[in-house]
Amino acid sequence: MNNTPETAIHTDVMIVGAGLSGIGAAVHLQKNCPNRDYLIIERRDAIGGTWDLFKYPGIRSDSDMHTLGYNFKPWRAEKAIADGPAIWDYVNETADEHGIRDRIRFGHKLIASSWSTESASWLLTVETGKGETQYFSCNFLLMCAGYYNYDAGHQPEFQGRDDFQGTWVHPQFWPEDLDYSGKKVVVIGSGATAMTLVPNMTQRAEKVTMVQRSPTYVVSRPSVDRVANFLRAVMPSSWAYGLVRLRNTLWQQLIYNQTRTNPDRVAQTLIEDVEKAVGDIVDVKKHFTPTYNPWDQRLCLVPDDDLFTALRTGKAEVVTDTISHIDATGLVTGSGEHVDADIIVSATGIELLNLGGADFTVDGKPVNFADEWTYKGVMCSNLPNMVQTFGYINASWTLRADLTAEWVCRVLNHMEEFGFEQATPRIPDLLAKTMEKRYWIHDFSAGYMQRMMPKLPRQGTQMPWVNPQNYRKDKKMFRGSAISDGALIFTSRHTAEEPLKHAS
Image (tube, rainbow, N blue to C red; front, side, top):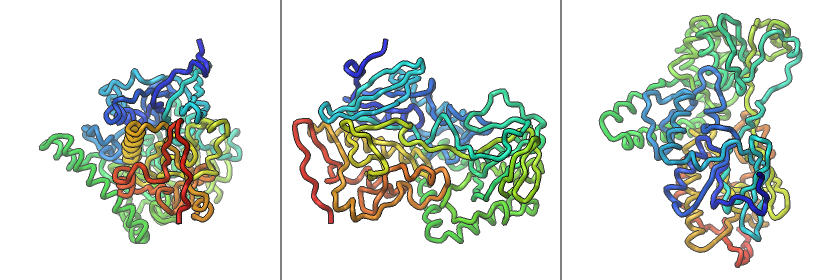
């Protein structure tokens, strides 16, 4: 029997999403806010998020697991560049170790969230897998729903697609019974998914051709971190994990900073490394030399040279060109080349979705996120008691997810200590009118991000109205800065907000 808004199931904190971020947030809550009750709603029927959804051949991390893993749970497997099933095991093991599974309501999709200042709570409208409507309420909402649409991937319109007589596949919805043994496969795309699919599918396919409109920077790394494995053998695993995590985060930041200060040198190094790996069988200038600077879009990781090995065997090929049209037996490029295909995999990206696609209202007024400002990249101006977890585009996702969860616990403990019920970022009117507006993710040209940016809150140029996307700065911002900073306004139902002072 459905509950009603008046009989909504209440919890102190509601976490939306039981993937990598949501399970990690639950652990942090249990550890740092033991007096707070919480629930997790998960639209799917399993833990794991991305690592439960994607089933395409070779699905793996594009970051090392010493930084993609949680800061409280060492990664103990031999391979640091892990496959999807290993990461799924890691997330599920974390949930079971901390007794989180019983807190999850599976098959529950958040449809709408409505904040009431009068009750200092969110009312959540949730659709169950049975088509019923359930209602929950919470004092604090922690969105860990990821950033892309689970129901649809990005699919450009290709002229003649309906004429194709073979099998058309999007990696997000990989058919479990797809048999590509001895088949000619075309993979459209140049991102991490395409570069994972190509070497894995060559193991069974007759030939795999990656058709890309433009090249992507790639970097090869060993899947096994021998230093990490050695350290784990000679010292406690938590010490070894901490040391390797520190080394890797510093290395990530160093490389990223180099791409900002000396992009030409970094680009030259990346391209020279590819030339050494593939020899003269591939035109590296044409197929692996992008027109943009490194980290203007995400670098693609190639573990153990697997893509380059596949290219050297001749079972894999790269074609760099536009697509004129699809025909019955493959595709035709803009220059007129026909690429035969029994199977076409459209690895053309994801569709971003803000906050899981749910509608938000505050005291009955719909929220237009594009009209608001981001606060520290985790909260939105004028939205009380709601935090969104969004990781890094230039480093491992979980580094920022951990920091976000730690900061949420600091906020909750501050509210408990001083009797506050509401925490709301408020930007002074003068500052909102005079500060430069930037996209929520600044200086990143990837298409999947650019398509979504106009719909998200803006960031400015002054703290705390920024989204640094910098681990060093974020550690200082989330761990070192005061919770009560004059921009995050704390109130209770019995006290009115003080007028904001205009910032200079």
